[in-house]
Amino acid sequence: MHKKTFSSLSVLLLSALACRPVIAVGWEEFLFLFIVIGLLLGPPLYRFIRRIDDFRKHEQKKKE
Image 1 (cartoon, rainbow, N blue to C red):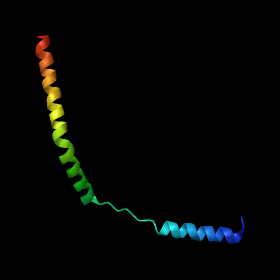
Image 2 (image 1 turned 120 degrees about the vertical axis):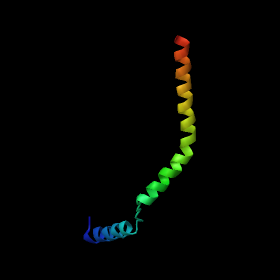
Image 3 (image 1 turned 180 degrees about the horizontal axis):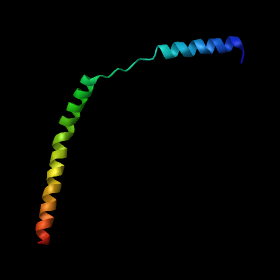
Image 4 (image 1 turned 45 degrees about the vertical axis):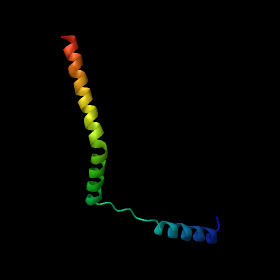
């Protein structure tokens, strides 16, 4: 590769890397995300666990 081509490509690459956005996530964002996920998945998950528990109790009574 020619020196001029290499230097121009390296300048383009470095400028492209310098313009990339930085994603900074702190504990507040993780807390917010955890709360949102808990609110969205909590009730269906709770109902599913209750149904599994009821099913196991029903099967145990059936065996006795």
